[in-house]
Image 1 (cartoon, each protein chain N blue to C red):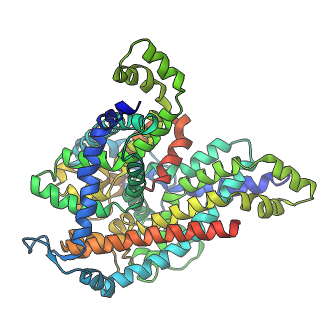
Image 2: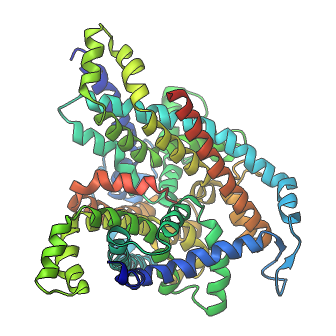
Image 3: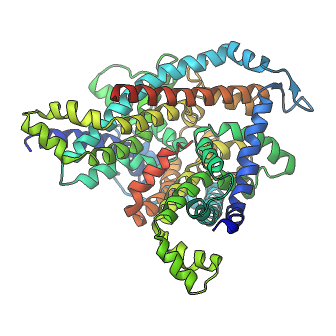
Length: 276
Length: 289
């Protein structure tokens, strides 16, 4: 117990250092530009203002479009990943079939291999069929790339269901698909929540595929589009950039707060499979 | 159940189609590219040159710089991230009040897309109005370094930024590992009169070896895949000072459209990732026996 102060000092120090960049970003977003670029600098805004937020939503060309792109691509990808993950996790957990071991080995391999290996032929393929610079051009690879996580997490979720539950449903005369849909899927809610958390964060943050495949600003998502805005601004106009970044963080924060009970499982699952 | 084995493929069907088209097929096609000379803009089709592509990549001075940069970047990144996440996790298990808040605060940077995290640091280190430079002038009273414009410094400035972006996962992994160590081991150590650091040395570290392997593999993999920071902060510069393997691969493919070269570099990176992971796992396991 007598070591408590030392532990608190270490943790508070690290926490303060880690929070500082985001706190400074938030404070900057509430300052007018003349205050941001003025000596001596101020810590707290002298006059709290939403003028930067109003500007990026009403004046800043492209930002609204990036937000819509991010929402559409992430929303569609996550829904498809959850559905296909819940479908595929079931036989991985409860059935024996030829090729099962090979498939599980493949899932782990996919996770270990750097994504740029898939990206090079994907670029060639999407260019050939005209999928580049479209929502679908990102959604399709995102679904594929995130399915290994989804399948492995959903596999363990279906493994956890006792066999008696399934047997009871079958005795009642329910077909296999009906049993899966009405009995089993609702029992995997924690697995679905964990999958949702991981996949949402990864798709929302993804940069490598988005910057490569979405070269027209009309189709770019926030992590790429904001870099584009930064490149177009003459100098680093942080009165404009700071609110765009804060807005990008909000959906992840909301998801984290809603699903905070699954956070540890989510972080474990996410990192364990190496993100890009 | 056996007679319904085929239905497994029905449930797995959509996943298999997606992963087949966007993972398995590209994986093989990349492997093929890596044995060819193939400029996507100029060449109608890939031309088979065998291992020549790999030889050319290994001889490329920029690739060699990227490889050296990975070592120069990877060692301090690994040391700091590993030690800091372990220390923070140990400290978190020792405190009660405010624990969740402290943990969330330290994990919070994981919400930011790495490309935008880089922009935040451009602002903090802005030559004119960046808070770090202004604080530097007030405290050290010399001109602050030129951070990303300095060839000798730029790569190392990315180390703390990457630690900031990546610490959440190792911290949580260590926490879970620490919490799974049986209290009876600590009680036994206490009976033997162990100090706090004695407990760390003789109980915590040995019991934590599998967890350390996971963290080590993760950190090595992440540093070998670093792309967003050099892309946003320096475009690989100044000169080639911040080229990473991933950034090298990406520029070969999508700036110069040398798909064969890029695919070979990508496979070399994959070999390094798998090799380092296996070596790390092996090293930590051996010492555990």
